[in-house]
Structure formats: C-alpha cells, structure tokens
Image 1 (cartoon, rainbow, N blue to C red):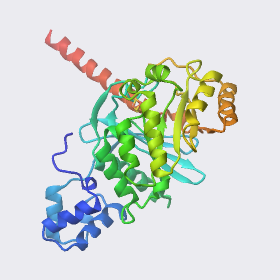
Image 2: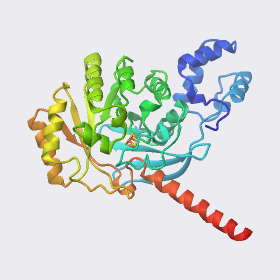
Image 3: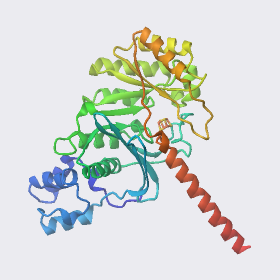
Image 4: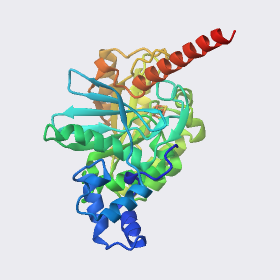
Length: 366
Ligand code: SF4
C-alpha cells in the first residue's frame, strides 16, 4: 500500500461520526460528509460547500481520495463495460459493469492478484500483490455510478466476484458492504449483493453470523475432494467435507440459499457422473442453486470448453435430482471480460516493456 493518508472511502458512517466528534465538530457533519461522498459523489474536498473552510482543510490534511486511473475501457456489443484501473501504486485492477434487463450490476475486485491458485483462472497467475482497502473497493462502485449518472441510471446490484478472494480480505470487504447497503450511502438492497468465495471455511461461519441478507456464492467446481484439490488448491487447506459442513451451518443459520458456481471444463469435471455426484452432495443442502459456467479460455491454461449439448445434459441431471441449475449468460466475451484476463495482459505488456528498457540499458552499459 502506498497511500500515506487513509482514503475518504475507507470510513463507515459510524467511523465518520467518531471522527467528527474527535475533531470537535457537530455530529451532523458526519452525515454531510457521507452525503457529499455517496449521494453527490464529489471528488474534491473543495466541492463540499456546506462544510466550513476549516473543516475542509482538516479533511484535506488527513484524508485523500482514491485515484483510479482509467488505463483502458472496453465496451462489449452486449453493453458490458470493462475497466482496467491503475491504483496510486500503479497496480492494475479490473471492474466490470454489466447491463441486464433488470438494471446494472457491477463486479468488483477485492485484491491485487490472488493467492488461491485456481487452475482455470487468470487472476492468480502472478500471485497476490496486496489487499485492496475498503476505500479502493468502494471507489470502483463510485466510478461505475459516475459512469451511469450520465445515463440517469444506477448501480442496482453488486457481485463481489472480481480479482481476489474476498474472504481473505474480510475486514475491508465488510466495511465495503456496510457502506454499500447504508441508506445514507449507496443504498443498494442487501439481496442485490452477492459475495463469492472459493471456500475459506472459517469466514463462511463468520459471514453466516453477520446477520445480513447479502447473498453467498461458493465456487465449488468439483463434486468431490480429490478432483477439487486438483482444480483448486484451497481445497487442501479447507477440505470438501469441511466446506459442506460450513455451508450447512450457513443455510441453517441464515435460512438463505447458497449459489454454487461450477465452471465446466471439457472432460475434467463435466461428465454425467460428475453431475450425479454433485447432486448427491448438494441434496444435503436445502435450496441449493447451481450456476453452470462454461470455462473461460485462458492462454496459460489448457482447459477446453464443454460442448453445448454436454452443458445442457449436466443441467438436466442436476434438475432430475431436484437441484436448481442455471447456465450463466456470458457477458462481454468479445472484450475478454472474464476475471483477470485484461489485467494479466496488461501486466505482461508492462513486463515486456520493462525488459526492453533493461535490455537497452544493458546494451548501453556494455
Ligand atoms: S477464481 Fe477467484 S479465488 Fe480462484 S484464483 Fe481466481 S480470483 Fe482467486
């Protein structure tokens, strides 16, 4: 992390209330600051015109706005817009705005890179660089909302499914969610937010105990321990049986269904016997829903896509076993919108450029 001062978006409303108190300002100032940040969405302290000059100076001295520099913006034929942003430390992250019939959803990044190592994912290729702060996650939504402001539209749902494992950046994630759902913040309905985890078991328990209405998705991708460990090394840390136990706890505690993400990889996990085995596992969990995702092509990975017929067959087997299953509508496939693909490309280009510079400099000194 390179920011010296905290970001303005790093604070929840309660933290702003404490801050104004500590700074001998009247309590209502916290609400005013929050309003400037999330309702009026200003990007400069001087625009907060109902605050005194002294207070604005204090804010300026103690906080900074998140800088998300737009490195690239790709627009798909289907209306999906994918941003590649550079943070103040030059690390790149991705944010995707997707247009649906029911509104706009935004997919946010929670970490720079990822250490989970799923074998089919581009986001993990360079490992984990660092966690994002809550403010850096929030800034992605504010940017997306600023984009939509020009069309008089709003962010209606959020999926925390971008680069990174949100449950490995748990405190920042929870702060982000608090600001998103706050009626004086972005005011997004809790049921319109989904957090997806690769299965960080202790934090599934923790999340179940948070008492929210926010949806949980689990990237399961295999119907048993052995295959899941091959595809997702996290399964060695938190074995399949423990994951299923945590899911049972979650559904028992919250009464909410879990969505299981299942990326279909040709011949690896997409056969009829896999669908049968998955059905038997999920029968233990009431109301389970499976989201079938044809795997994205990643140059460095060699998985093949499952054929359409096999995808439908997989879905039929689940449904025959009374497990709800949908096939995820692919969005932005013409702009490499799958998680981590643009960032990986950007990082490779950066590396190539820096190698070229090194080669030229080496050439000079020789
Ligand atoms: S799928 Fe998610 S958890 Fe797995 S490596 Fe990619 S970003 Fe990390």
